[in-house]
Image (cartoon, rainbow, N blue to C red):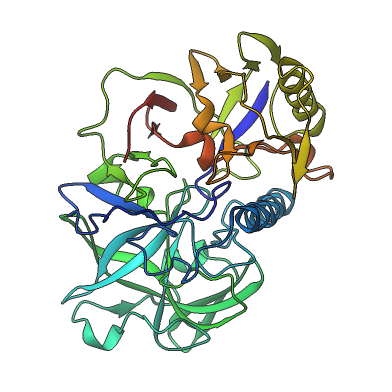
Length: 409
């Protein structure tokens, strides 16, 4: 059995600005939020000058390496409650953001979402080292600090007690954060949650912190799912857009309502050393119509996938770019790659496993081997590039993960 981790924070690259005018005013409705990629034309965090394709690939590979190192550090530590991190250690911006409204009256923030993290936190007014956009506690009638004796104070990393209120410190990628633990109302789409517990950042160093905060979708006690279990019943789904889409935005559905009824599922697994992650059992990978091999990213198995891919490409010349070692300047003839799980086959078309240059002249296999160390040798991640244009359902009460093809853009 190979445990495979679903993640929202790896393997995407800069969107090439198109000629079409995007619709950036899609309203959040019911319990459904618009999910915006950081490089979308609708995102304030998009690069002012679009990167070249080559530079995008090199940046993506560097970000993925940092992400794997972060995930590995959580597993090595063996902690059940851990710091929040987007894993983008070379950039301040997260990968996907949603609109959240905090306080009374509401203040809107574009918060990163991450399935491998738990508690939420936001930069607060007066924060040293934070972005210009912050949450102002003094403007909210419903804001209150968490007392030192509250149970939530024991659910954060490195808790401290300054007087009567709880605070905590954490490291995050290349950053260090100090925050107070607080409560306030949070509104997601049209759903309002009172007394939501989150971190109010007071100081931050480094450039790893998502500019307007983070919303954790993990399984931990301070995650959004745990704090809203009576409302959302620990169930959600997301659909990530194709990088070719104009708006470059998808959706996040919270709660059991409006979830797909006919969807193939596979059992969710738990790792006692990192119980917040969502794991599934990957039993094989099929390259094209044959060549089934076991697992991905773990180096021996990645090599088997790569070698079968190259074999099916015949005598075509192979080149490399950055950390991607299987690139071609001729049309790729491998039609699909299929991940095989108990009860579920996830068949990927070329748009989910090939990264193509904007001119279409070069294509690279969008997979890579995990770094060589004892932890990463068993850590495998299905990244967002493979998940685009799929509805991914997380159903914690029934311990299942579902995947269905869906045009998300």
